[in-house]
Length: 164
Image (cartoon, rainbow, N blue to C red; front, side, top):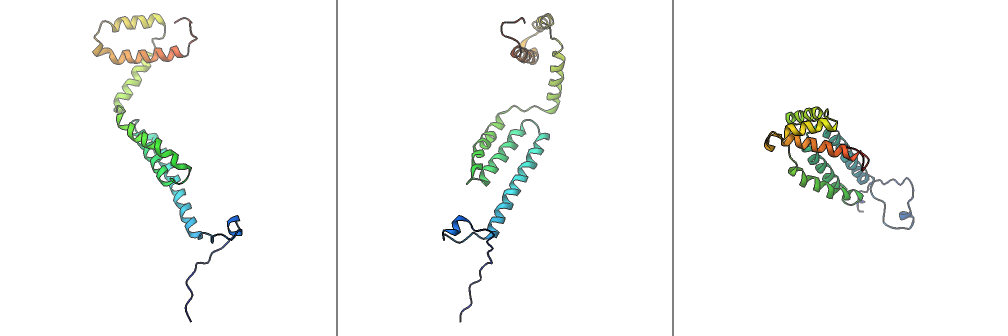
């Protein structure tokens, strides 16, 4: 007399179409549970990393997004989640190409933008540009850049053909 092979106790809660046709035996419940916990863990990791992205400097946000999307694409490569792998890799490639600015520079530039936004009428802008023309471009390039961006932003909201 021989010992019987040890089999897991499989529980079938409802009969699926696959088992009704007499196909392969059902998957073990344990494998499904492990896969489910891996997916839930990956999702919670992604949510935690995305909330962490709010406090990270602007240059590191694309790196974080790239890591999260690439990791999600690798984890879910068999399903529709694999579509997010390519954008994740693109974020990782483009992140080092972004110019990095220290916090002090960004604060100073934001303050400068607010001060230059006070010159809103055409006469005030002309006076400011006339003053900037007296100095070399190497010194005033940042002011000119901010003024050009503000003019473009203001021009986009105006009616075409309207007054300045």
